[in-house]
Image (tube, rainbow, N blue to C red; front, top):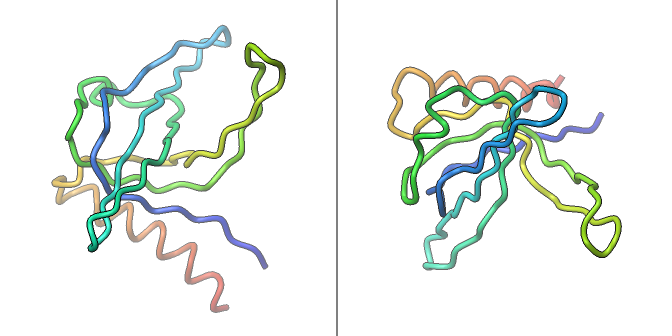
Length: 117
């Protein structure tokens, strides 16, 4: 059995970019910066399909929790076909949201528990 579960908690590096695609679907793209104990940082791109309205209100420095999967996406760039590795979020919550964050973590834990069976 294989598993692809990603949980990330960090600060938005800049406000999300929300695009409306020709299909009518909305896609929110944002960078989340995580900080390790030793002070190093990692910036992770996150994509969220059909985001809730509050996502557009996020600003640089706002802390979020995202649960989803790691995905490699291909697209046509200026120099031909290009790719990007990102976290495709199934759900996102503000880190301080005591009602939603535990539910997100339970969802991720349930996926990980499947490995033990």
